[in-house]
Image (cartoon, rainbow, N blue to C red; front, side):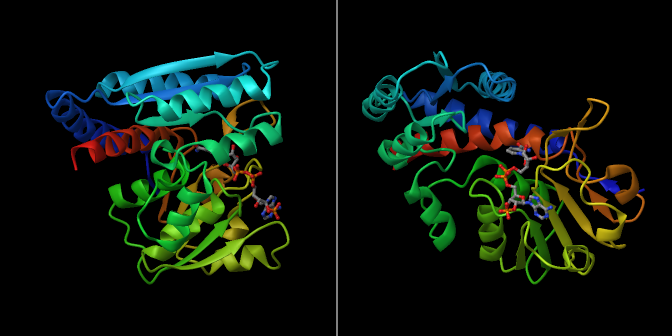
Amino acid sequence: MAELLKGVPAAAKITEELSSRCEKLKARGIIPTLAMLRVGEKPGDLSYESGAEKRCAKIGITARKIILPSSASKDEILGHVHEINSDESIHGFLMFRPLDDKDTESSAREILSPSKDVDCMTDESLAGVFTGSGTGYPPCTAQACIELLDFYGIDVAGKNIAVIGRSLVIGRPVSMLLMNRNATVTICHSRTQNLPSICHNADIIIAAIGRPKFVGENFVSSGQTVIDVGINVDENGKLCGDVDFDSVSEIVRAVSPVPGGVGALTTAVLAKHVIESAEKLLK
Ligand code: NAP
């Protein structure tokens, strides 16, 4: 049975570190604050919002919620983003995505101040991830993969890594973060030929596909580390990842579970970005 790369202990460690940084900020008169904007009542958004609220409370970050009906107009949504930009007491902003209206989402991305962009909505933040300049914050889930590898002491330098998925929220940014750490990355997608063979020959596989149990035993080999980013529901209505955990965990060296892997770390990374943004005021 493979080693389980659980997210909870990694999240607990980050939470503890952030709590003391948060106290120091408060002692200097800065109350780290995250604003979250939710449009509608999608179950995934509600669950992430509740997780983020709990994480902020543990650390001492103030979480403000802006909740709009799914009928909210573009002007109304963008009005809130403008207000957040000019509110100096807010250090980070999270808008639950995707919005149903792509045009509104894209306008919100354009107008958000990059300094408050703690989940990589803006092109400026993405550019920072791609250039490796260190400016801006990577998407929380992509960064959570890196935090998980770090927590378990898995060095990626020189390793062959197959990333399955090329979305702007996970696949591409996580590939850049890994390459910035000197990994050799193969970015795979739905048109990739010989995907099982590419994965079989990698040292590490990152699965960010959105297909239940897609990565099966024919994709993996002994000695590998597998990070499962997927959040899906299987044929029995049970939460599962993109990796067929039961068969893969019998073969590889280490694998992250779903639930309790990458997903358990995402709100800790979000909180980390809020604290870092607030700390910039001290410089
Ligand atoms: P996405 O935007 O739908 O992207 C999926 C990617 O997978 C695409 O690049 C797609 O390729 C690729 N793909 C689809 N079918 C494939 C196939 N048969 N073979 C190879 N590649 C294939 O999804 P996403 O937003 O990146 O999310 C990926 C997964 O992560 C989902 O399960 C999502 O629920 C989960 N997620 C988890 C967290 C967390 O906190 N753990 C956060 C966000 C999302 P093409 O580009 O060619 O279409």
